[in-house]
Image (cartoon, rainbow, N blue to C red):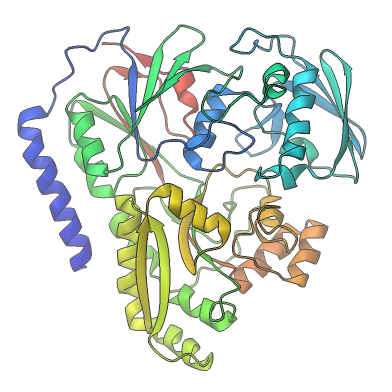
Amino acid sequence: MRVFNAIIGFCLLFLCGGNQLNAGQQSDAATAAAPIRFAVAQAPLNLDPRYATDAASERVNRLIYHSLVDFDAASKPIPKLATWVAISPKEYRFTLNKSSASFHNQAALTAHDVKATYDSIKTLKDSPHAAEFTNIAYIEVIDESTVTFHLKQADQHFAAKLIIGILPKGLISKNHDFSHQPVGNGALEFVSWQNKLSLKRTTDGQMITLTEVKDPTVRVLKLLRGEADLLQGDLPPELVKHLQAKPEIIVKASQGANFSYLGLNMRDSVLKNLKVRQAIAHAIDRQAIIEKVMVKNTRIAGAILPPEHYAGNAGLKPYDYNPTLAKQLLLEAGIELPLKLIYKTSTDAQRVRFATILQAQMRPAGIDLEIRSLDWGTFFEDVKQGRFQLFGLTWVGIKTPEIYSTAFGSQNFPPNGFNRGRFSDAELDSLLAKEDWPAATSRIHAQLPYIPLWYEGQFAAFNKNIKNYLPKPDGNWDDLATIAYKK
């Protein structure tokens, strides 16, 4: 409790001190033609959709590029750039919409671009998405607007996997640097990327800038001072409440679907013991964390996909907070107490805060948690390379149950998938092959290759000049395509 109160007191003191001079002020430069300034906790790392895996990059890429397929509110695949039909269990034919926009370099979108995009993913040695498409035997262009994917094996869910943004063939063949100079045909066009990422909306020329501001208190101050127009997510609840009390600020909230978890290294000599993993699960008081430091609408999670998803499992019971049981499990596992573990996280203030709370909660269970906070690039690279014991991350925007195969299948260790903890379980592999999602998620929940935490509530805060913006359950920034700035 002292940890909670100390951090809350500091944040509010800092904010109150700044507000006396700046509350309610708007930049004199703000006009109807001014850019919409979005202050984000983490800038995107890679604007090539064939490589991007971090949340910020995925969210921006959805706006720069268009994919063949998207999802509806029930996470069912729907047409985006193209409609499709299954000619046979191993053949899917896609027909591009006649109304599809041209690429931002004025080149027309054709079936050749679709083929070139997915052919390139298959040949890239270091693309984290390549494993997703190894089942493609070859891609056949029928005509300028029609393309057929021929599969090695039948896959009734194949269409739902085609969510990679389409790139122009002409630039792919020239090895264009899409990572830093993206060219797509989405609602936002890339302009520049120096200290901030500048994008231009194709419909009306409205400029939108994304600036990384890591410290949550500084982000709030920038909004209150009129130095930013929009914030979304990544704030502790006391700062959200502080913004809600400001008449010049609008705060919108919604239930979230992004899954936060503790990742575990199953090759670690201690963590490969199931009783140790169970002890860690019982050493975390999720409800207390949600009540004290999470925003409204945050829910305890049981699996990557929420219970309302068509492949969700509402029957998964949370691991209760029981430090006595946790300590008993460690002793039964032959562990000498205290068990020393290293937890890696980013330098984001809220993530470090979580780590500090986890450290305090685990201590009565006989676990001595050492926190190592790293800059985002170093941290994420360590996670991808398996250089960790424990880490904390969030799966963002996941729609299809195949995530359980790519995250936990024995054949999907990086770079062939996202099984970063190197978990291998023959029984789970069999369930995944059968697509028995209730049984598979139950097996995952019992074996604990990760420790499920919560689905974080979503919110956005903005000044009254901003119109037409609502936070999405998966945290996407899709409304940047329609957001308006009206002074």
